[in-house]
Image (cartoon, rainbow, N blue to C red; front, side, top):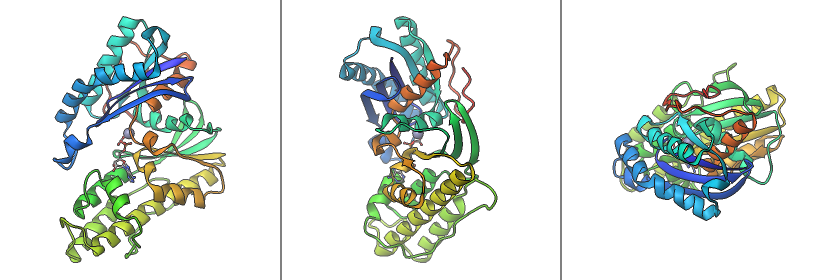
Length: 336
Ligand code: KG4
Ligand code: ZN
């Protein structure tokens, strides 16, 4: 079964064709990062306009790279939330138009759930039950997945998402945009200089990163390295200390939850899961297997959307033409 996936929730315009939820036939991603860089963050109106310009050629490119015609497809899966309303609308409306004209089932997919499904696109297929950590620009969620569609949210961030903290700290230290990759690059080979605060929130699987972010911003001011144009060794040491602290909390809480719930595997997902220190640390501290998608499948893409859609389709689920965008869609709450 070949599914066309469409993703436009944020600043990546993406389309992919995936067979049986696991085999990527084509995965085309057009990033808007260069367009938003000059603003130091994503401008929603600019993002949706760019999606409108890119989405049709991107879908055509995915179909041609996969060597498939519309008649070879079994369904169209599209992200309908969470994300930016104007951006989501572009993908959802195109998916509806194509599904209607090609007479294919339409499946609305939750972007956060789709991130988890990037783990079905690698060499090892996950074995339930699993604990999954989803760390992206807008979310930090820890979930227990007992089977496809059977998920329990264990914890979430109470303030900033992990990726958001990376982005804000990188801006404060003048390291560039987007912050996650900028900090990772800048910290290569740099030894952390500060023991920064970690919010453990004992007895809860929730996270909190705003205290850590504020501590970095204050220290940057004290050290007079805030917003400098060429980062000093002091700024780099501070960035490395920040990265170490975020990774420490993410890994400790995920490994502890996996132990508490007696799961077989840990799955990482979301843009921050592209971070090498996070990848290495979770593997070294876990006693059970850890699955982490290839970096290009951690950040936003449509292959994960197609895979997620496939497993919903297998259960006989599909969306109606009334499918709408839900910018604040929660995990485990995708209405179909
Ligand atoms: O999943 P994603 O592509 O988009 C959302 O759904 O938000 O995640 C983007 C986030 C950004 O905050 C970005 O700074 C962060 O993921 N990110 C990273 C890395 N690559 C992307 N954070 C840390 N290290 C990285 N290598
Ligand atoms: Zn995402």
